[in-house]
Length: 66
Image (cartoon, rainbow, N blue to C red; front, side, top):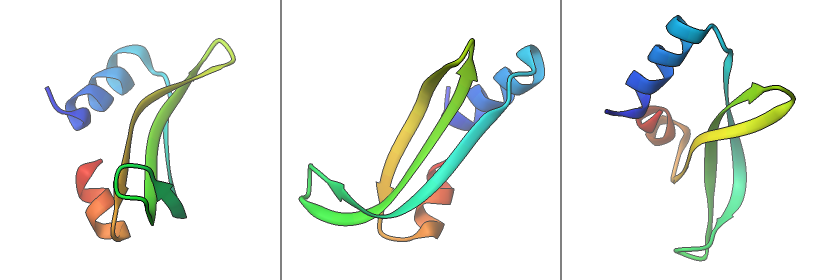
């Protein structure tokens, strides 16, 4: 099951908002290079739960992953 399927399942069954964000110049510790960073998360009972995160060369490649 891919991330997009999980997100749609959570949105339609539980009505919990899911958020995503993209940041610039974050250090990818695997390559030791600064890249763009994207994350998807949700808030439940005041806690932030990370669903997934990615590093990419540009915004388009990150949006394709999400």
